[in-house]
Image (cartoon, rainbow, N blue to C red):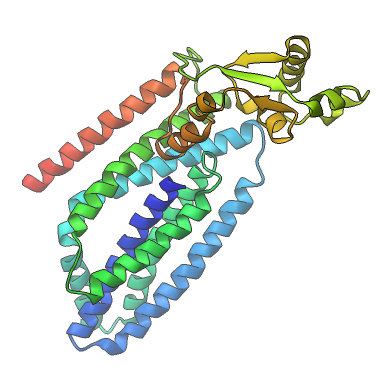
Length: 336
C-alpha cells in the first residue's frame, strides 16, 4: 500500500505542478480566457486514464499459469523502465519545467493554436495517468491493497498542490522529488527483481540456483479441532484449499502423525490457516517471514525476498549500479 501511495503522490504532484504552472502563467499574462481549453484537456485526460486502467484490468484478467507469469514479469520490467526514466527526467529537467512550459504556451497563443493548450493540459495529466496505471498493474501482484494507497496518494497530492499554489509558505519541491526519488529507486529495484522472478517462474529466464539463501524463520504449525472433524469425513481431500494439493496433503498427514509441523514455508499453508484448520504456534516469528506482517510490508514496498535465486539477487544489485551510472551521466550532461 505504501509503495502505491508514494508513486501516486509523486505522479499527482508532477501533474498538479505542470497544470498549476500553465494556469498560473495564463492568468499572469491576462489570457485567463484560455484556461477553459486547458481544463477541457485535463477532463479528457482523466477519462482516458480511467479507460486505460479498465483496459489493463481486462487484459490482466485474461491470463493464467505461465502466460500470467510472463505478462506480470514484462509489466514489472516495463514499469521499472518508466520509473527509472521518470527519476532521471525529473533530475535533469526539474529546473527547466516552468521555462519550457511558458515557451510552449507563448508559441500556441502567438500562432492562435488554442487547441494546442487543450492538448498541453491533456498530455500533462494523461502521461502521469498512464504511468500510474502501469505501476498499479505491476504492484498489484505484490500488494493487494495498492488501490487504497493509490487513492490516499492522490488525495495528499491534491492537498499539497493547493498549498503550494495558494499559500506563501511553499514547501521545497526539490527536496520533495529528492526524497521520493530515493524511495522510488528502492521500489523499482524490488520490482525489477520481482519481474525477473516471474519470468523465471515462466521458464523464460534460467534459475541457475533456486535459493541462494533462506533467512525466513522456521514456523511451528499445529492442527485444530476443526481439522480433526474435517479428517473424519471421507471426502476431506476435496475440501482442502490451495494450489499445490500434493504438498498440502503431505503437510496435513505430517500434522496428524506428530500434532505439530515445522517449516520455513507459509504461503502454501495460508488457506488452511484462514479456514481455521491449522494454527500458527510461533506468531511473533511469523511476522518476520516474507509472507508475514512485517515481511509482507517490506516485500510490497521494497521487493524484500528472504530466499531469492542467484539471478534475482544479481538483478536487484545490478539495478542500483545501473541507476547510479544513469544519474552520474545525467549530472555530467548538466555540468557541460
